Length: 424
Image 1: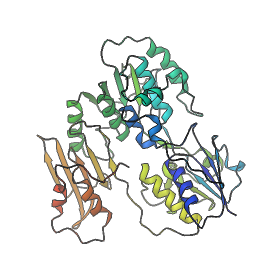
Image 2: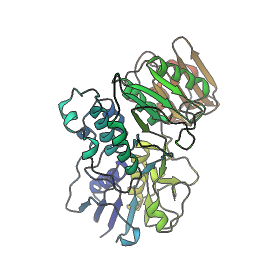
Image 3: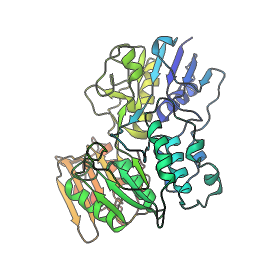
């Protein structure tokens, strides 16, 4: 009987357990260690909570129960203490936190969201229309601390600093980080009437995904919506550049959580080094999937797609089947909460050299398509993402016949939403 241990209860860990329990060929047991208190949840939807679209219970993942499953609410402390035939590390990533002053809260976990919402309400923020949402928003003083997180001291200092502020108008929120999470957070908060500044140390917003012209149009749309955008700004208390705001939300990116692997002596790069099946190159009994993993030789998908793809490959390998499907490049699709012109979709390899580009300065839209010969391999859309679904299909099937007029892909679905194209 195979003994499987899973460390981490986010999307990746949940999907591994779900797939194993659903596999009729699996005859083993599963010990599942959570990394946070409470039920597993979908981290991708956290900005929906900030926008007031859902209550915290709406982001919880389906409960998994089975006589073969033992669920533990405490994280796995060391690999040496676990008894397993297969170990799956789905420990995710932790937020990058610059040198901070006391009014800063990172945005990575459900506990962080509850802290932010509690601060906004405690400082006179808008009361949510959803009664369940209001009941689930914990004030900072009642929040259960997230084990092992570095922000506890900063949050505790922030409580005293924030509670002494006077608010004569809309709350002033500074969001630090101009990547996908930072832009989504700024859009979510401004849609609720907050005064938002978005600060980014890179040359332009979404600098890993968009070229400068596309990012400039996005910044113009955000500015029109009331978000003040600052780029090329090294933000830290150490440099003396720090926002004067009622609350500072840190969305500065993440780094893979690799402490378990490091202690066990597993090979590391930025993340835990694995082969295309997700198996550690240092121990073939151990897998790493999701945000903690780094696949040798290929660019691994991130976010929800990375979690699902990594889980699929690991479960197949545990069952003795090597995956032969090619690696998937994760798309980017921002949640911008009805902010006009802020929609963004990036498909294929980010920042690929453009072959065809259409820009409409008046409408603040830009569409970029990269080709390999006549075959679409990447695209970036800003302001109008109606063509995203058709582009996603074309890029996902490179062996299909190339379109006779590739540029027509950029106008397919014009004026409509992205259809089934989901956020990764």
